[in-house]
View 1: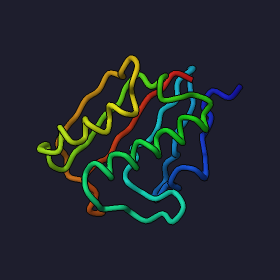
View 2: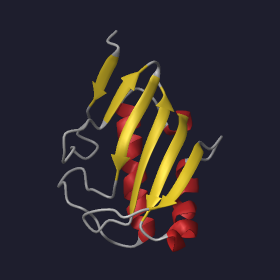
View 3: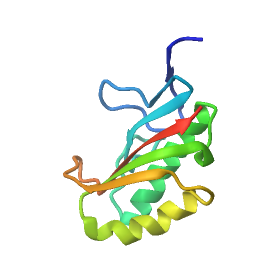
Length: 126
């Protein structure tokens, strides 16, 4: 097996810059920051925060599954919110994707490009 293996799936948005959707290394899957991007059209979906979080986590789910893992094997997430006031709404959706042991998580308020309100990266056991 390669020391580092790229993960690609048409079920997640194609990278818009020089990065991989995810890489597998040392038995882990490292998912690049994902946002509310329609994986079919590549267009940003700039609706309500709950919808943006749902699409973002759906993209992460597709990438994690393409790597041979699953959402119940995600061990760490970092959530970037443009407005920390969206924290409760983000959590409402986040909890529906992580129903067992929830991953360790950091949430920060950040400036994000393209008008999106959320970006999330993840690390999963392979």
